[in-house]
Length: 219
Figure 1 (spheres, one colour):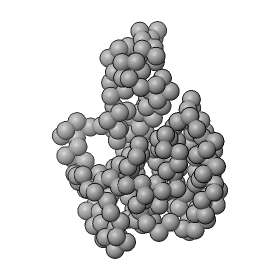
Figure 2 (cartoon, one colour):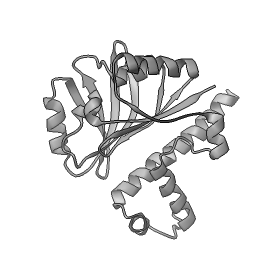
Figure 3 (tube, helix red, strand yellow):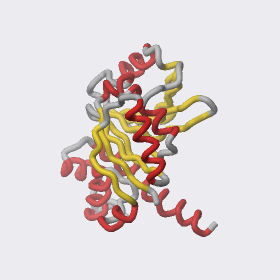
Figure 4 (cartoon, rainbow, N blue to C red):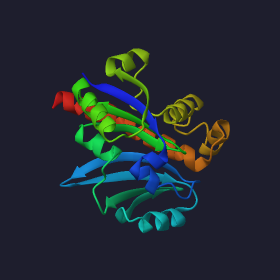
C-alpha cells in the first residue's frame, strides 16, 4: 500500500534549496524530479519579480551546469536544472527510493510531501537520509486510505485547494464567470498572478488524478 511522508528541511541543508536561495523574495515549487541516465533533473517553478537575479545567481553556482527556462505564466517561470555533478543528498535519496514528489515548495524552509509505493521504500528513504545525516523534520506519515478517510485532496497543497474551492463557490468556472481573478485574489489577500498560478496547477493535479487514473484503470 502506498504511504505518504510529509517533512520539512531548512534550505541551507538541502542542496537544491541552497542553490535557489537568492534572491530571498522568490518562491519555489518543485514540480518533479526525473532520473535521466546517470543524471537527476529537477524541474522547479519559481515565482516573483526578480528572475534576472535568480537566473544569474543559479548559473554562477559550481553545482549547476545549465539552467533552462521552459515555460512562464505571469510572474512564474518553470526551469530545468542540469547538475554539473550528481547531487549527493536529498534529491538522490528521493530518486533512489522510488518516491514520487507530490508537493515540494519553499517560502524560506522547504516543505515536502512524498509518496512511496510501500513501507519498505519509505524505510529505504529514511535509512538513506540518516546515513547522509540530512536533518529533515518529519511532520507525519499516512496511507492513501487514511487520506481518503480525511477527504481525498488529489495531491493538492492547502493553498491550491483553498483557491479552487473559493473559485468554484464564487462562480469563477461558470459561463459567463460570476467573479474575476482580481476579486478572488483580493479575498485571499494574494496577487492576481499567484492566484492564477494556484488555480492552474490545482486544475492540472485534479485532472491528472481523475482522467489519467481512470485511463489506467480501464486500459
